[in-house]
Image (cartoon, rainbow, N blue to C red; front, side, top):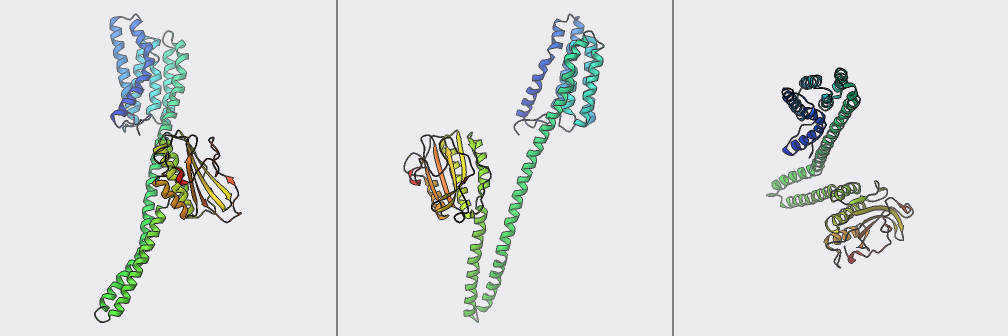
Length: 412
């Protein structure tokens, strides 16, 4: 976390500087006591004592608010607030109504440093003390009208902001914890699957190896058959592991859409994404191919296009070859490596091959302003899916199979 919230302890020099400046900004409202010391006509001795009292109040206030979150008990915070309240009372009674503003800082400090269950008592108490002192000093009632609302409502607003900051931090930590738990669960699942896949095969290889070793001196023909079985089991185990690893590496379209938003936002590109896709009837191989297409397209936008906006759309369409799921990625950039010449680039070439294996196709080409990539994969049987777009239509043209698109060889 680069900043530090209300009621949170700064953890580095930058956070300490930010919090110090933030606290210092609000000290501008002490202009009334300062003006009173400079122009109030007090004697030299009173002015000196007033400056000492003001500096002591500000120092105590800064220490209280700045050190909040370092593990202080409520008793320590309440004691500090009592000292601030006593200083405010003494200075207001001795120097006049211009010093009543100090009670606003006492109340705000209550909201910033105490939990709501205590602040809901200390804030009204500070407001009541302000009222009592204001009625006891000359011109106090007129100042009370201006100070009572900030003292009461401003402090309760501070408690709300503090709770909001704490809730945000807690949610962020919970999200991190959930991600770690998900990663741990995935590792455990991978370990279980590999154990189930390899445990039986490796045990069988070990037993047959021992058996072949015993047969080799007297029955070499039987030992040869056991060795052949070992080879067969080993090859099958290798196939099983490759299939398992391929399944773990296979990207999912929903996950890639979420990653797309993060990547484009981080690159400063405005994005318009479709809702969660309807993948009914879409084979896993087709979904994986579209996910790879989306990843490659977004990578090109981030690295090469210099675009300010990127539109992503998904639509089920009925074509002459049957129903397809179509992914369209369109940006308003100026292109980049592999986009201006005839060479589509290794990424798009490999992507076209991947889509072709899934029975799909890829089209990519420059627009009048920007670049568009369209990937299609077959879905269920004909007649199951009608033309029902599930993504936005871009202002740069329809996000469908028509438009100024060329085949993959026309540029990427």
